[in-house]
Image (cartoon, rainbow, N blue to C red):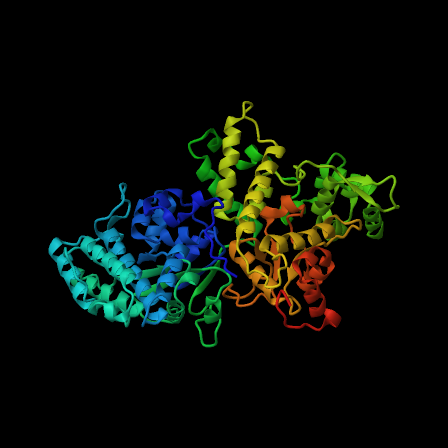
Length: 634
């Protein structure tokens, strides 16, 4: 399945196309950044929009020198290297692959490697420019990042590099060297056969990445005398780099060359993961630090979101208010620590107590659950500590969630039939408030920034100047969720060769979400609804591919992320949940829940899969619990 598609979702906050000074002006450091800057090899793992590019670009000398504030000073005093940022781009990869396929007598791999290495050398020369004369308007870099390079030394350096690369050099300067590398790329793009390659391009086919880095570093040291110079070689979106480059970089993670550290960014699942997880490869914790760009700790997530909020609120009337003042507190997204603050949360006039009592009247199955556990809603504040922790506090958010959706028992239905409220949108009391906004956006900087900016705009336009209503906040979350789903729906998938309608990523997520919704809002109350799925051997291969695609774009989140390098070759045996940004659309509680095998979920939802021509495949693959290997359309 081809899922190489540019994301327009909150694209304005994509750092790929903005210069280092703009990156620095927007930057809010998280705990992940302080992990990244250490003098160690690092592997950033995260879906699109999780901030990988922004973090790597902040290691560039110009970005660090432009960054203002106490934290910037802390970072500059901690970083003992210059960052060389080599970007990647899906459109660039498509163009290179297309060109490589048209070559007459040259293998694709050497050609794509040559193009990548030309880009890398240009990125390294860009770094040299940034530490010498391409400085920001407000330069905070000091002696730690700025190097004085006399004209004669620059000429000596550029001539030496041009000679070793056999590169025609019009002007002996760093800028001239960049121009020559651009011309090299142009020649690569116009060449159709090996016979048309010039001598220096043929040499490029035998050059490796670390060799090129050493050539530049050694010659730079020779003209400057900076013998302790170190470099962080930063590679973004490594999954779309040539496989031979991926293999080399993963091997370099075990490198002992003290001049270089490697900072790699990669999606959670792709072909490169197989190389990273192969026997004898570098290991997380020993050779490199694996840094996942998602948040399992609620307090860490909210702390980062608050920093982002303060950045967007700066210079507006909102900078004088806490985000909890503008958005109010959430009804159901309190941390476990706050939920455990004794019986006062469940006193006689508490909204929590009201939710328990209302749902007890509406939902006979919940009333049975309370009686079975010895809980009296009329005296919640008198509940024993053990019962409070094991029962009341555990189910309180779910009680509020169900109460917001149910009107009561149907008068004309069987005894335990519940009636859903007629709602124009998701219940505002569930999907609003500061904690809910942080939870829904997962701490994803692009998602949070897009939503926070619109919320702040609406607040500034409010004539009352009071907190945003819960309805307004819920509307923004729903709008963002719909935009994300529209993008998901546009991702192309493999077509059926039998004429059946194709099961897309949107369809799969919708089917799974429907199962979760029934578990949380079914007629029988459960304290631990199914809100996660585990991909098992009975899951058809094409659906496994869809799950991997969903992981890479952030539509699902790894639930059990104990794998030390956080990258997956296969989803089998792994547990996932749907991203909370989609919870308002699919009527799901934003919380952890128990997991169910994906093949079991698909079997339960078999009616929705009939039109895709795969119901028999799923039924057969899980018959009698014996998994069978089969494709989606068999």
